[in-house]
Length: 207
Image (cartoon, rainbow, N blue to C red; front, side, top):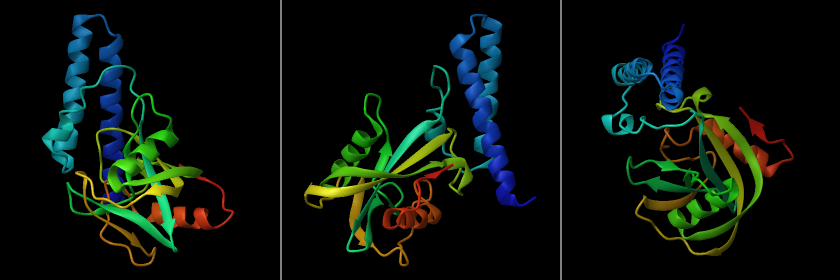
């Protein structure tokens, strides 16, 4: 078994342990069961801390409540003159598609349009869902949460390029000459598949 496969297996195991603990803490009324679920949550955090390079700041956010479900990450695929719009992330100095977590109350398309305007200064409209990606399956670095990534084809309708507090640079890149990617946010496969779907009649990607 490859090291990569072992990493993915442990990542998913720790995510499931944390999800079971979160759901158990939400619905359990027995104080002893609650203590057991807290212990289970700590085991999940210890797994992430010992096996992966996950910082304590990220792990501090695993203490959510309610029934545990995957998070939604929305990304915009904007093409101008055959090149893809990307932003240079302030936190790691690497490049990604504009986007981020979908906020409660937003539709997915509204969330991605808001993220684009906040991060790039452009106003866009969504024209097509290019893909729904299970983050666990495509080589992203591990996170404590299970995440679905929604990539939308977007069309520019106004605004002008402007750097935000979340990014240090903005640019359009050829699919065959990409900058160093922020792999926690986007991987090469997602970009190449999205470009193919955006420029052909290929169906939306899923999983």
